[in-house]
Amino acid sequence: MTRTPRHVLITGGAGGVGRALADAFRALGDAVTLTDLPGERLDALGADLGVTTIGLDLTDAAAIPGALETAISAHGPVDVLVNNAGILHLHGTVLELPVADFEATIRVNILGTFAMTQAVARRMTAAGAGGAIVNVSSIGGRQPTPGMGAYESSKAAVDALTRWAAIELGPAGIRVNAVAPGPVDTPMMREGMPEGSPMREGWLSRIPLHQFADPRQVAAAAVFLASPDAAHITGVSLPVDGGQLLV
Image (cartoon, rainbow, N blue to C red):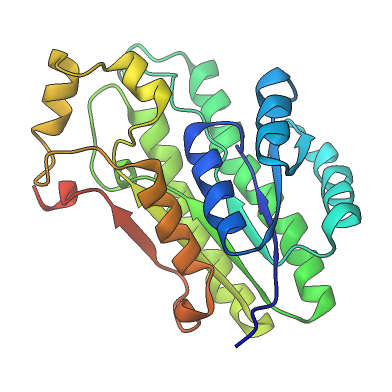
C-alpha cells in the first residue's frame, strides 16, 4: 500500500529530541519543517538533515502565523504538529524561585504550545482534512522533584492542554496526544550528568529499567501517536520513562 507523505512541523527542532523526531519522520518519507530560536545551531541542523528550518521565538505569539505560512509555502498544509519546544533549566525551590523564572517557563512551555496548537488547528479545521498533534510533555507533570516545580507545573499544564484540545478538536478529525518522557539521554543531558556522576546515578536509581530514554525512543512514541495505527487514540499522555512512574 502506497503511503502519502505528510508535512510534519516540529518545534524545538534544534535539540537532541528535535533531531531524533526529524530523523524518525523523514525515515517514513515525510516532509519536515523544524522551528527553533534563530541561530547557527538551527541552521547547521537544517543543512545537515536537508530539511526546512524557520527561526521562531514561541514567546512572540504574533510571529507564529507568519512562520506557519512560511512552512506551508515550502511543503503545503501541516498534517502533523509536534510541540517539542520547552525550557528546563530554570530551577529553584518554592521559597527561592524568582517569579520571573516561573513566568519565563510558562511563556515557552505552556503559552508557546498553546499558541502553536491554536494556529495549526485553525488551519486544519478550515481545511477539513483532520490531522494529528503530539505534545512533548514529561512525567514530571505527575511525579514531583524538589527544585523542578516550575518545569513540572508547566508540563502538568501541557497534559491538561492535550486533553482540552483533544475533546474540542476531535469532531474535526484532529487527534491530540502527548509523549511524556522521563530523563532523556541527549548531548546536553550527558554534559550536565556525565556517566558515573552522583547526580546521574541518583536519577537512575529512580528508574526500574535503570537507563535514561534514548531520544529515538521518544521519537518512536511520537511517530506512533501521529500515525494511522493510533487512529482511535486521542487525549492521552504516554509515559516513556522506563517505569519511573511506578516507584
